[in-house]
Image 1 (cartoon, rainbow, N blue to C red):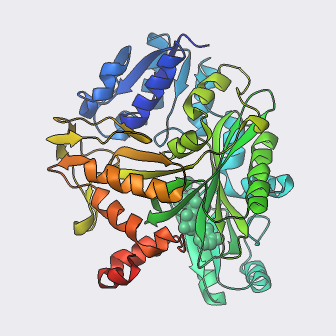
Image 2 (tube, protein in one colour; image 1 turned 180 degrees about the vertical axis):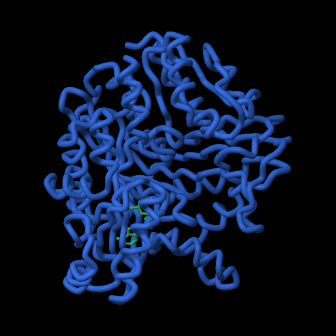
Length: 456
Ligand code: ADP
């Protein structure tokens, strides 16, 4: 096991990693920006090093500064958390060149799964269901039209190097398709230095279902079942739950096994999530693989009892996964609500500034992962998520009731948060009946007058 690891992140995930490392008897070094000088999580780290000013390009994204912080503090490994450099294979490569263990996949596995075209190819080989569409990059508009006609419109043009929703165009006609290929390719070339695009079927009504996986460097991989993250706004997840409700066991198991096969074939070490869209007939189509720990990992920890962050550190140190597939089963149902410092009544305007009151709920089956406390000032530089509220109940109905009760107990002020929105979503008929798709929250927000008919 490592003696000391460096955490190249901030906020709740930095704290989550500190807790896991401490349990494993491992010291932590936290790098921080000047804007995070008073970050409460830093008090929990064994060592802290300032790596630059507030803007992340000058601090949390500075590979050179993070590596020199690791070298001067004698950290043997770096945990990237999520966001920032977590899916940057250049960073993983520099770590390796400097003899520092990157807690995550090899740069090769990250590149293979991070590129959408090569990931899709690997998925096909592993038997992971993918969207019908072009097998490779498309250059010739006539070829794209041929593919689109064979799978049927609407289709979506996607950039192989895409991320954050960039380089995507929906096309319903030949003309839109030709135009979409040109603009998506230009956008991707400018943003990612790679203009390769491909075409696949566009699903109008879909649920977002994802499979949590873990792999080690000895060729083992397991899945930890699935989560539903259908409640989103602008592609940002708001509520996640597990197991994904209403899916036939046989379908669920086949998809989960195929996801674990995919990451095993990629020689993947660490935590990975294979994301899918699912249509009304419960057909699954892979979206992408996230090659890092995700925000919503506590949902899976609650229902499986497996500590995903600890496992990721252990396998990076060369150990075997501590669980095999046969050991893993689901108990009850878990839900997570992301607490964002945003005002849902004013177009989700960010709410930086002083948090005067912050009192978290507690009790049986309640977990709050947060770096915030009363008196903390939220800096304007970063993501607005200030915490995650996770509940675990015997079944989904109990979990929803527990979440409503926990939200009622949660006190945050004077800043606004998304907790008020969560109350409404959890009480809405589409959520209760999981008769929803990835646009349902936006529909509800767009037509609040219709909301009463949506409420149970
Ligand atoms: P990115 O890496 O840019 O986030 P993804 O492949 O994860 O791109 O897709 C982002 C979002 O776009 C998905 O969450 C989904 O809402 C939508 N999307 C992507 N592909 C499809 C598709 N084939 N059909 C319907 N929606 C899609």
